[in-house]
Length: 126
Image 1 (cartoon, rainbow, N blue to C red):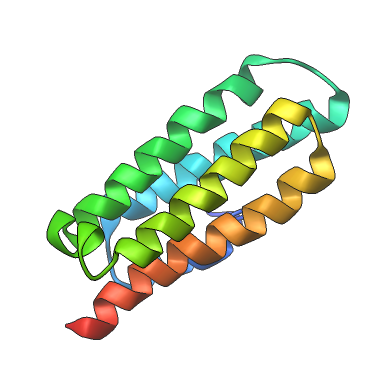
Image 2 (tube, helix red, strand yellow):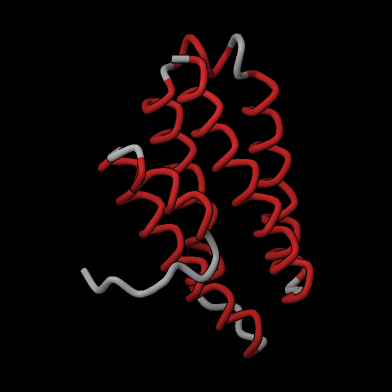
């Protein structure tokens, strides 16, 4: 895997790398890659598979996060973080459906922050 700087998930990739959470890190990189392809499709005005493929990848990243933080924490003390991630993911999916590149970029900033905050928050409780 090429080690370029993440364009869409820098906070999440950094948090996963610092915690040595390999599965989460792999999913974060895969999601970042899918986001780049989706971004390109949005800018080009295409209705390509890249636009459709990002939503399932976001769900895989959420699942990897849930596994990393533990489902007990994710659905109890971390429920606020889980709701923030879900809301940010919904904003992203809306931006993709609207074909709005600016909305997509802003929504991804919120998603990255929500995801990284959840990963870091569970680490702080240990």
